[in-house]
Image 1 (cartoon, rainbow, N blue to C red):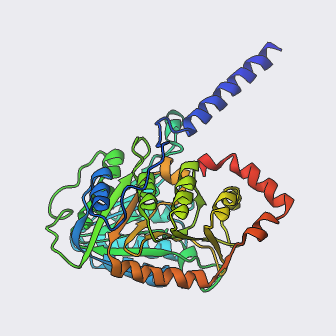
Image 2 (image 1 turned 120 degrees about the vertical axis):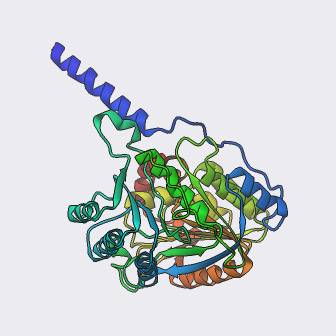
Length: 421
């Protein structure tokens, strides 16, 4: 009897410790951000640059890449052309043809004398072929896994690097939603090939992307990357104002959440949101509703029935009632899994990167986003949004309210987990 009691107490303590480790200890923003100025007001850019950390820099050229058909060749071409350094951080890196192409390209450059540094998330690269890792190490690549979990590091189990950063020679950078896996091949023209966007940047803001990589490299390897091989002089390459900022667990300011809240609260005309995983917290929901009351048109595209995480989809739908009642338009993408992460505000402010619209990205993961202030670039992305919307189905209020009782039950159960999704 006493043995049973001791075992029960021991298991209870372990479960309690595990649950506490899943929680974020820092406070997060709870008070509404009021509408003080518009996105076109100089105060908006000043606030974004000062609150999020790095300044918003002129002289950048950004190119949008859509789906693996465009994204992977551009990234691989940049790697093949590397002369000094490659820094690469990603969440998903799995086995398959694409994984092998990247491993081969990185190894070839390392053997040619290029300094190659690769950081893979311990959870996200769980499906990687071990031979890829061995080949990279044998080629001289400095390879790290972010936050590997051991019995004495349980506090790190819920903090992952979800950043997707590739910087070559300190001159050209890539970020967006794509992972290194065969799911992203093709042109989203079949159920097996996901719809996603990635972005290539040249110009002064590339140094900020390099700094974002260096942040986790220092945390993981305790090595500082310095010099012209990593931070060369960067001349103006285009007309876009841009900023690359990072967000990590433990930041009381919650940079990425603050960026979204401030962007939404500053909108006066339109918000277009492409969200692979849309599970906003209560304050973000209210900020969206307040924007609607100001007359802002809000359109959101989320995955449809081709969804890789059903629990996330159920949790998302548990939050739609208020939004639909407020007039927010929610579209479900039909052809395949929708993995884009883009917000366009008032046809001038665009944010792209690794961040999902959920609590995990806002509070728990390490993320990085590229913000672009450029009406021409925003207009191009708005066209892409409309193309995706044309392949999506609008969820009407009547249809949503008449969904099945079983569906509503699944949503209520999933909603209890939304702080971890």
